[in-house]
Length: 141
Image 1 (spheres, rainbow, N blue to C red):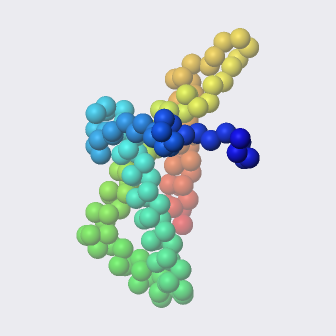
Image 2: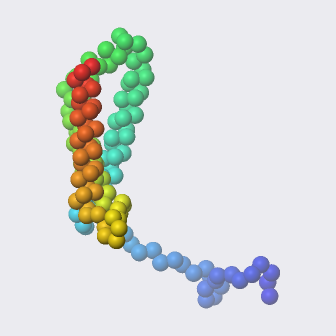
């Protein structure tokens, strides 16, 4: 008997092969739920890249004159179109996140579960309140 314990070899002394089920590249196009999930993930990566780009621009601005120059450059038609696309991605990401929240947060009141609509409604209400506060701050300043 060899020292070192048991080995996992197949017949004839060869190692057994693991079964790898073939997976098509576009597997996520088969179901609408998978497509929605993949689009949500891609939009979040795009938004993160966009936020990093804006942070780099703001850090590069340095002083008030540099910030004003950066702000004027962001008013081009290309920049406005990019902002609209990012807003659409952010809205899609937010709505799909809030719609999934009742599955991640299960709230019980006594013995019964809080309805999904109450959990979603609380998140949407919070979104509206935070947006209104930010809108007020921006208009005031």
